[in-house]
Length: 158
Image (cartoon, rainbow, N blue to C red; front, side, top):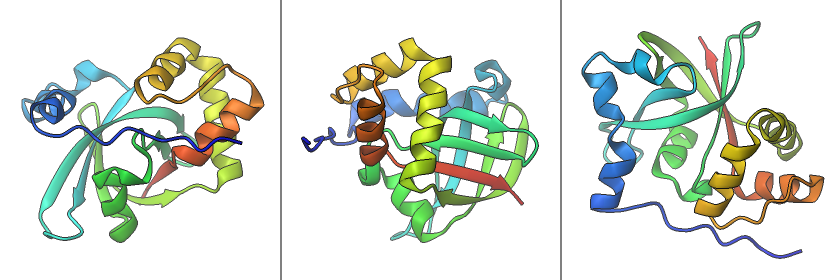
């Protein structure tokens, strides 16, 4: 089995492009992004300052009030490292802000979430795999490799 080498998270002006949707939320236009994205407000593990990131929602469980996301740059993502250090965070979906607790899923549970996502959004997952240089052919093996490289995170509404 080959080890997946994820790219580094973007820095400089490239990071600005990834962060641009934050301004939609700051202008009160978060609803334009629908229920596919959320604004995560978390605490920097080194600075202690408030930080924000936009994340794609890969699944919503309305029964348990749980939102599922994936760390696209793996464990290197600053937001991921920050929530592992301080898991009590706030998310905003549309106009609704919620205090939540973040938790990393097990590999098996992450595979199940990614399998569901692959069935519901095959084109989006193929494009993501190209951006992140992760081989993906839809097979259970490629889902397993993806789940090993990309942590799946839940946000449970408090």
